[in-house]
Length: 629
Image (cartoon, rainbow, N blue to C red; front, side, top):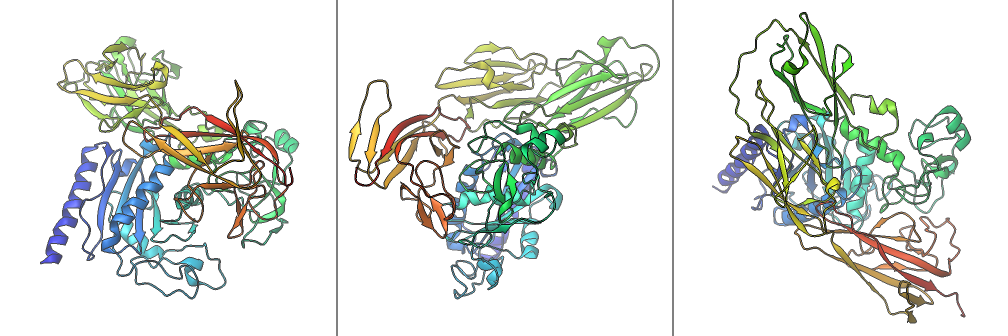
């Protein structure tokens, strides 16, 4: 009887997922409320932005979570996603992504060889294991999964296949570990684990390579002796050679790195300490906690965009169309910026201002066939390589033959909305909000936007509204979209107030307050910092900090305890042969320069809330005295 009820629940979950996809609904769907009984997997749509066959699908699997521990899987997944959406380019392209969870309870809790090779094997759904699947010749942090079993579970998600999805398997473990390749893996419960996921997706989806200068922890790498790496973010070239040859990251040289410092040439990478160079001193592919730098971010934009089609739908073009009608395209809608649409008639650009619909009647076409095209391009500043910009990932063209001798039958299509930015949760003040409509052949529905009751001008493209252009005052606002003749009015809450953060430090020797300067705390040794965040809206908040203007670093507590404060010391703290918390010039591995940076440092902090708002930086000063002073 239990098996029958569980089977019914699984079928209901499957039907719900199929219906959501078929309807093209958008929004975030909460995880299943019921705990699976352990006799089969359940597919749960976590975030649905469109039909699965038109989206990039992240499929999360859990291993080593028993039926009773399934709430822990959901909590781990939520934490991983909160971090992922705070990192570019995932933040700007979240609307391209569906997220699914396949809840498949394991018979036993945990995964194989965790934490050591002498740990017992567990009976789990995906046979995940540390040490490369319990291989004595591997390394502890290499967390592998049975690819065949992972694919079989992912295949349960309707509409997804290898070409349009990325599998991420989370292990029920607090041990640090993960892997990238055909599938991405990460431990679910480690303090750093939510940062492992974007790193491993960087491998699996973007083909990015590790920028570590070691393979076995605690053992410096060798000197690279191979040819010019195929990796986009490794090179043997000097900066001068990159500029002269227009090679590798020459377009970004000299710019402030998103991961801190300046884009240039930094030795070490591909598990070698010498003989090969990377663009930034640190980035997400070298040190968890920092952002993708511009070079890696460009690669990831292309990788995400290549999983979708910028043109979601268009006027049918299998046969010529008449000149007495409208022609239209529906596009994707990145959260970070609207796509551009350029129309051409017989090769000549039309002055459409980016409109998604062209009324051919206004063109007064001469007799004879004509060629009409619409080119959709992503103008994101995250991409500078024009070959990438012109690739199918970021540019799509659709065309029609127009025959003025044809007469188009009126179809009586009423005005209405067909898709839109989710209305169930607040949108951020930096968001591009969209509303797509039906397409009558004899007219163009016009979307009327209002902010707090006041009309908002949009220009020719009235399907996308970039809220950044409205310069809203801090607070909560109401945004509406209305179509004349349509019964439905769309309403969003706009969250224009970022979350706030507060810090708590361990007891200093003294506190110095001077007019016009941040408060200063004086220490003669290690100290701790705890960051807490508060928001007036629901949703998780990610806190970040930086030292002396370096790259923003995600606050996660402490590597061995997510609930512990971050610890700063003069030389850093070595944990599992990596170094954390060196005040001043950061240090990642034991052989990095450990010279203490005594003196005064600036520590800043900020927040990224669930709506994507990024708070302004606030900070304080810390003075670290040398011994004996």
